[in-house]
Amino acid sequence: SEESELYHAQIHLYKHVYNFVSSMALKSVMELGVADIIHNNGKPITLSELASSLKLHPSKIGVLHRFLRLLTHNGFFAKTKVQEEEAYVLTSPSKLLITTKPTCLAPIVKGALHSSSLDMWHSSKKWFTEDKGLTLYQTATNESFWDFLNGNPDSLIMFQEAMAADSHMFKLALNECKHVFDNLESLVDVGGGNGVVTKLINEAFPHMKCIVFDQQQVVANCSGNENFNFVAGDMFKSIPSADAILLKWVLHDWNDELSLKILKNCKEAISHKGKEGKVIIIDIAIDEENDDPELTELKLDYDLVMLTMFNGKERGKKEWENLIYEAGFSNYKITPICGFKSLIEVYP
Ligand SMILES: Oc1ccc2c(c1)OC[C@]1(O)c3cc4c(cc3O[C@H]21)OCO4
Image (cartoon, rainbow, N blue to C red; front, side, top):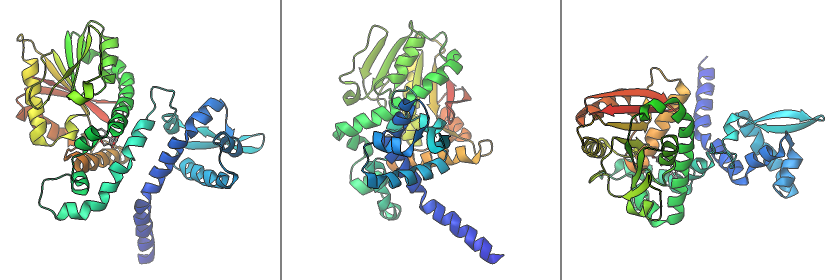
């Protein structure tokens, strides 16, 4: 009937209006360290045990229950019985919040839901109606997000910890894609931050000369060893030569013009000693026809996050191909990696 269509449309609209509630409830339990308490408890935990571990005021026990109810509904916890009393256990998604595990993604939850990423959205109408090429973030704050990070050490650390957290997932993927790094004598990790990915590669391939290449203020107080070094520089100017250049979660921060600039400098960097060389891109590849709708939604979410914060973008397979050929490369190969990213091997 017309009414039921209207009522369903209403539910769809309200659900999207309040999607932020589940995000912020997740951030709340992350900040409280709920996952660590349940993990360290070693068995299902009752609400009162959890509340006393958290040293909550008695008036907040009901609050905790209702937060856990929503997050259980959304798959972050599960309910069981301990001597007839309800108890909570972690699920795979909340196990990613255990801070003692290398797969901990709490830093991403913290960074992505930081006020610096959220407040800017209130300026979107101003941003849409202006004719300037600013990001939403710049429209809201009058500075670029990169300048914000470089001007606020705590936020830069928060950002780097988020990138590093995501890189530990790469460790699992490295086992699947080891062959990509075979026979490489040297590798430069462009935008490698504090070097988590490069370290993982260096540990897997100790004879490979690995360089973390990033901005001065990022690598300034980082030290390496004989096959693992930090080099400061500007990827838009020139990139140190190597057999392979790694670009993990870098190109999606930049529009096509600037991404082309980076890729051309990468091509320059691998065309030494006449060797084959390769560029290894690890980034999101949108694939609406083959991906399940939930995965596509995550990729489209990231596309708007990159757009609003960096004037960057997530790219579909065709867009990656156009960019790679435009940069003068002759061939490439895309393989899915880490669940929602792809590893794109690019050959000169
Ligand atoms: O190339 C990337 C990859 C991921 C992310 C980037 C840029 O910025 C947006 C983001 O949502 C984000 C924003 C942040 C943050 C981490 C963080 O992770 C997310 O820490 C502070 O603000």
